[in-house]
Image (cartoon, rainbow, N blue to C red):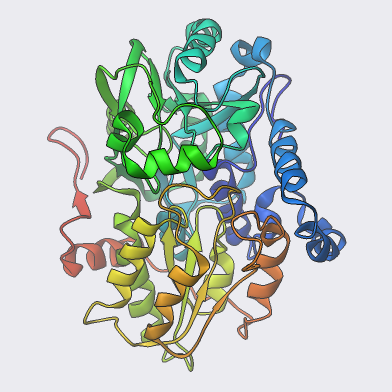
Length: 476
């Protein structure tokens, strides 16, 4: 997705996709095709769903990688990518009006549903810059680091208000890292575009809502604002990426690769996790802005990306319960397979998972089994993000069927082809239509006030999610 002369954003990135999904919801629209193609092309592309998964697996994988490459930039263009162009693109997605609050910070699917309920926009801290390259094996971390180090310095010199997190995940991103390097940037200051948006779009009595995920990861610190991260949040732990183990040996054997464990550069530090973690430097600049411009500031903090999922689901359940819906419906989402507008119009309860992996499934099962929510769902709908790899810790379709015991009426998968998963790339063409075929409501409920959301989080007593007022000297 080209957003400037040399600047590209990947539609398959979590932040980009979630901005697009939320922006469409603020206009009362659903989120087809995970934002990869214009919404009007859905009717043209949907017939391909019956064909895609019948293509041989190796060809499907190659097409998946090729699609990712079309959204990447050349290595000699990385230094020309302009962070302000990315931020300007974000602000241009939202309807031009004033809002009671604006959220800023960590990328998080559960938070997107809170923003949709509030009717407010979100400004991400993190962006993905995919860079095309060849000749580096998915398992060669040393060469990946060395190659990235060669092209990163000039970008950092031109963009002094960001940190750069070069990430290599040979498990979940195994297909893409054949031909793409993942560089994620984290904003350390608001910058001109975000400040302009806050001044023009935040109502006079509006608040800034700061979202902070405390997830960290072992890294090699290459300079003051440059990190190399091997592995990522998902089905394997950071210890397994660095130390190996039975699951890693089995995985690598199935990939027909020679090492039985990886030999990544030894980490010498920790840093905010490249995709989900929050860099605290941005908080200081937001506090500066809130004090200078008389804007109230509240912070929501949590440690793991999915810590916010049960709280958000319970908020929606409590919100909809007051309207006495005829059907209690839980939607289990996966990565960027989500649709905040459908959730609103269907009066559904959203439970977001990072990926379709066993740790995510275990947390989802823990949620539905809790005393206050267990056995209350008439219907459970499940979406599985297909990343194309039998990765470490992947939960199978059969594993996810364990949720069915908590559904009174039915439990079904949306857009999923059981036989093709996890190479079920046709799911990207199917999920939206299948969701909306199950939506009886015509209108979204009225937005809720921020005070109601903050009170619910405070009253729910979940120790993993906390509300903070600013430090002394800043506005409460």
